Image (cartoon, rainbow over all chains, first blue to last red; front, side):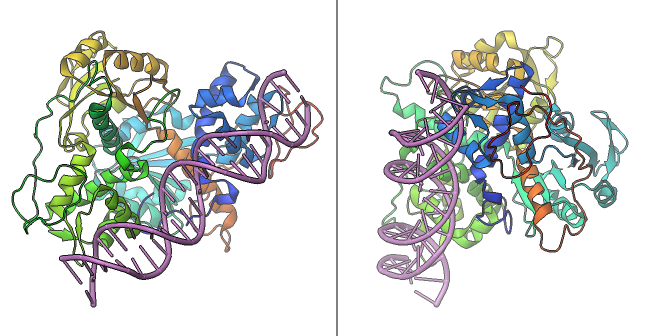
Length: 265
Length: 265
DNA sequence: CGGTGTGAAAACCTTCACAGCG
DNA sequence: CGCTGTGAAGGTTTTCACACCG
């Protein structure tokens, strides 16, 4: 997920496949909603559709946790909420620090989804002295000089990095040195961390790029031309068409479009 | 990825595996950095480590795009930047609307990573009349009454939803009806969309939950006890332990910890 | 009967290891 | 010689389909 040495090899932690772990929070969210509506039981079909997966996958996922359903009936909502929470470790308190209180850091600080899942924002940290003491989402920002003290005093093991890319690695190093062993990285850069430290990343622009890829495919496909609204707008060659091969082009195999010939490397 | 009917079946779009597509933006980022440092060529090994993957994977990924390298030498940085950009559709202009200008929406509006990748923030939309006209990141917020007009006039095909969960589906429906065919969803809810519309989601709390899962594992594993700093803090049973089986518990198979027995369903 | 739990098959993705080209 | 490009092997994830149980 991240770089260098990261994330336990290819082992599945305690027999639960990684892909399943990644879906547990989805199930939990759907179950919580059902629970709030006092729905007592739910079938794999119903829950799957509420979580946006198919039911076979859901049943297989649950089978890794144990046999928590009742044949002919379905799953007890409250019971499952508890089991999944426990499996994810959400029955304990996880203090989290957020480093980098810009727009994004502030948004994260105020994000309700954390608190409701057992994550407690233990501290907000920023390098800008002008921010120090200013409350954001009700929590006073602390200066990054105190990072180590904060992490160790509060027993923080999860850190969120929302700084500019340029300082993300050094913030990461300091967090790790202070005892943090899980990092959620919003900076658009690859972090390298020692063994035993987990990094997950969220890159906003990567998601958009993946969408653009699929969007581009849609234009040339549709049997009935590029239907309704929403085609790419200024689809001119706006972006720079950089370098090209310099040597006589003998055998370039790219499926289509070669590059406009300019400036060799 | 999303829900209901979404995302083209299990087909790989034009032969490029989905897993590879998801990594292209990573390569692109690493290559852009090299390009800025005027590095002319790069080996699969170097680029892989800069992108945080292993080199075999990278070479296999590139092999789906075509034979863009030179044996014994490596890849031409500029050339690859262009090829990957083209493959991702980033050589065209993608107008994007962001709906829901709260903390997160504002952060997204100001996020530099968009503009630098061919994404243009065409409009910011919010339902709060008090926001209308207020500039955020230099762009005036427009009222959601005008959503349809904005989308169709600007030929927007990508929408970003950063609203509260409660209104996300209806915003989604309106975007889709107006012609949007790709949606990036930050609201913690499952969106259902008609066939042909892609949805990708980013859920901040899901990532943290996955980290918590692994974090929890670390405690009980380490050969030399739970070393240094950073253990879970208030690891008491703080969270509510909800319902339990009501009938005599005959055959519950959950690997360990059954539930504290209280309140039947 | 209805719906879970699960072997077995299929699809997909990653890694290995090396032929072959510049 | 060095490094790409790629078949083949190995792993993981998804899907199928049905035995089995309440």
